[in-house]
Image (cartoon, rainbow over all chains, first blue to last red):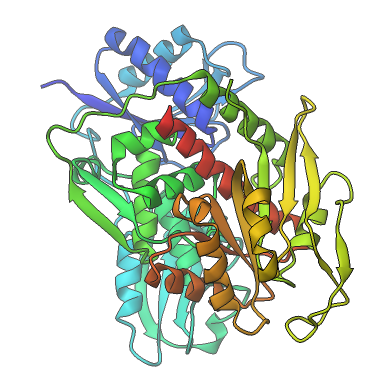
Amino acid sequence: MTTTLTIQAMDFSDYETRLVQEQLRVVASRTRYSWRFDGEGCSAYLILARKPCKVAAHSVTALCDESIEKMVIHPHLPRTLLCEWPMRLMNLLDILQMAEDMYVPEKHVMQDSQVPFSADDIKKRVLGLQPGEMLKIQLKTDSLQSTAYIDGNNHQTSVYLPGEAALFVEQMLVGDGYDLEIIPRTQNARSGDPVPLQSFLWKVVLREPVSALEQQQWQGFTFKLLTWPLFGILKTEPYMLRLAALFTKGHHSITDAAQLAQTTADHVIRFLKACRIVDIKMEKAVVSPDRVNRAVVVNQQADRQRSLLVSLRKKLGLVFK
Amino acid sequence: MDQVHNKILFIGPMGAGKTTAINTLSDQEAVSTEARNSNRELYDKANTTVAMDYGFIELEDGQPVHLYGIPGQRHFEPVWPIVAKGAIGALLLANVSQPDWQSELLYFVNAFADLSSSGRMVVALNRCQPADVQETLAWLAEQGVCLAVLEADPRNREQLLLSLEILIANLEIESQMNG
């Protein structure tokens, strides 16, 4: 059986991610093992990253930077390569081959999530809280700001975080993960600006790695959203707006959606998981066997209309800066 | 040759904030056709739009994206389709502090059915509480209407831009689906 190693990107734009995917396809025939691109995340065997980040201990990290002219092994960080960016084809091949050299079989092939808990676990525990109880999220790190509390107020369940939400979520999903514990409610825990639970869970799901098993489970179905997400409250990126527009128009498979919304299947699955966790109603149907992937046919008129939209986005481009 | 459509509509009842929203987004001060408000029982403001508002956003290549605001009072309804012709999308503004704002909202959703049924409409709620947005989303879904709903103060450019981003995303998807 062929060994498959996984690769993920961190902090790359949609365009850059697609570029890496295309390059991976081109060099695929020249590597010892087979490689699978798993979208954005930090749980794969090889992580392409724009800046140092905390990844699972088994991972090989390739730090990509415009200032680097030739690939070298990082002098201080273990299992880390310093690589040029933009990346040339042969350079990517070198990275893959070096990562293959570092690979020890039976330790990390096609592993599912490194995180013992998931956003679903958090939600289930919050729903099961009794009066007078709250949920504690304890990061397994040495950081001083390592504890968050979730408390159900009369009307709204809020998360009390020790610092910036995005940073805390990032720490939950790298390294050793986190523990969940139901504790008696304490006023001391309710410090800082509360974040709505929905907004917090949305952020967590969008950052959680999608395992191979999950990918299989989502493929083979079409999905339709019955309402839009609350984009004024939930973290938003352009690809999510396109996916929401697409899935509110009708049923689409993961593959179709990725193609039409010009994003990755990984992003599509994360988006749908995020919609599910904030209770957006969704229909699911089995993909009919005669359904073929939708080919994107470009015509001149559509092209000109798209060009206007791109210019308008560029002119307005303040929201997502 | 087919024309590239480049008109965005601002619709909603009188007092919803259409004129203000166009002024907030327009590259230059909007052209307005305001006259003394003779219906202060409905909404107590001195002036109201009687023909239309107009502003524009000029793109880098000099091409304008036109911003048209309709007159919100229902007796101007015959004018609406004329102003709406060729629009790529609409921002439906509603002032939650107005009486009957929900039925007004639904009236405009139905009056511009071409835009609302294709998702080329975003609902922007003015003077609302966070819970109003979620409730409106659910209420519209009960009416069989699936539209994005946001809180948007018409003076707040960032909030309006998110509404436009949603319209653009929708158009991008339509453009991809239609080839």
